[in-house]
Image (cartoon, rainbow over all chains, first blue to last red):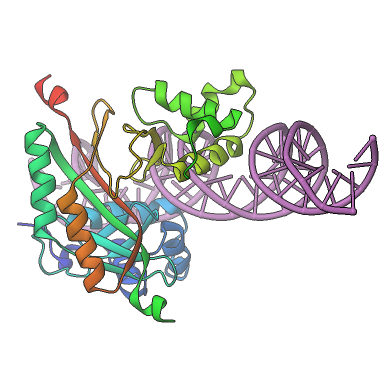
Length: 133
Length: 133
DNA sequence: CTGCGCAATGTAATATCATTACATCCGTTT
DNA sequence: AAACGGATGTAATGATATTACATTGCGCAG
């Protein structure tokens, strides 16, 4: 059984809610600042909560931004591979899944005897809205 | 015409050579330490050289490591998308290109009106050699 | 030649992201 | 109550990256 939202601790809940309410990715220190009023004082409080939430699949880390987002599909935990399209203008992140990409990367791994633990796919660019503007 | 190796400045050449001689990715500060003997004193000297080398396609940045590697195929500049398999045990990085992955991510971008500038594909895991050991 | 512009460089300081170390609290088990 | 483990609190430090400003070297117009 994977963990459910019910089992989250207070700190984990606060961090997850902060990310869920945000309109884009947040850095750990931004989360910290937004939770000062709730008693957060140190980065570690945020990083510890994020570590658990990442494990639960409720939060994703954007490697190319050193930032975090709430999972857009928190109820279907079965994603094998998640890709992100990140707009450099507005900061919006679009989360999607592509089975073909997953298969191709899996095939490469098989052919090369590589055991994948975590795969990062991030597209940086400009979203439709910002291109229109 | 894209820039050739000939046109590199002294600092760029030193940084590129350091990466080329390394047996895995290096952080900017590790590069700095290795170039102290050549007169490097500050991070910016490394970051400025890396910025140019990234632009020339001679160096890649590994987002999930905050580190840099010399391009494994510095003579064919036409890669549309490059993927990396990173071994968490030995640190070796395998650089490869997958046309199908490129097409699929390109298709997603087209369908969503997204203009991709840079795509990151990194697989973290364990290489064949380390699995055997 | 001189001075101007521009790219590269040098240096210091600071900003941003992340971890280590150690103490404390709290609920569960015994 | 004592022992234990998970979560938390706090401080300090380490690691990565950028900003700001001064200086140098070089091509070239005047």
